[in-house]
Structure formats: structure tokens, C-alpha cells
Image (cartoon, rainbow, N blue to C red; front, side):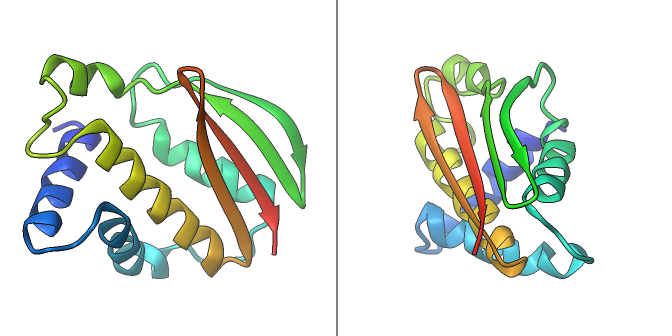
Length: 133
């Protein structure tokens, strides 16, 4: 099963229980946060997240800044066609809800590691900024 589909099922269940997408992403970080062991800087956090994102076939990121205290990158969104083909209702979740939940998850993991994670849409890409606290 595709990672996006699995996360959509999780997100739909959490939202049916009354959670917002951001709350669901935060809760997911609490489930898996303890597995993020070791010291992290901005580069190693980006590399770890990129390894997770590689579950998305077709993923591509352009890193424009890579320093221990700051990473800036622009990544495509290869999961978008899944939402487009389901008329933006993938197992009860929308693209916007998916990205809000994943953004909250990534920000919460970054916070656990003493970093800040910010993401925004720029054109059709996801812009990621990681900085030290």
C-alpha cells in the first residue's frame, strides 16, 4: 500500500474523531518521535525527512542552501495525482488536509530536535526551510 494512502486512512480516522489535520500530524509525531534518535542539525534532519519522502515515487528536491544551521529546498509533490484522480477525496482526506497534517508532523519532529521547520507552497512546489532554534 502506498504511504500516501496509509497516511490518508490514518488522517481520516483522526479527523472523524474530531482532530484537525494539524492535531493529527502532531499526534503522529508523538507516535514515532521516539524513533528519531541521535543529534540532528538542519542538514541531517532534511536528509532524514528526504529518506522518508523517498517513499513517494518521482520525488525530486532542489536544495538551495545546505548548512548545519539552515536548509532551504524546493520539492515537487509527486502525491498530488493521487488526490487529483480521486477528485480531492483520498479515503476521506483532501490534498490540503494531507499537507497540513504532514507539515505539522515535520514541524513537531523538528521541534523535538531543537530545530524549526517551515513549509509553504511556491508555485506547484513545496518550499522547505529548516533553521536552528
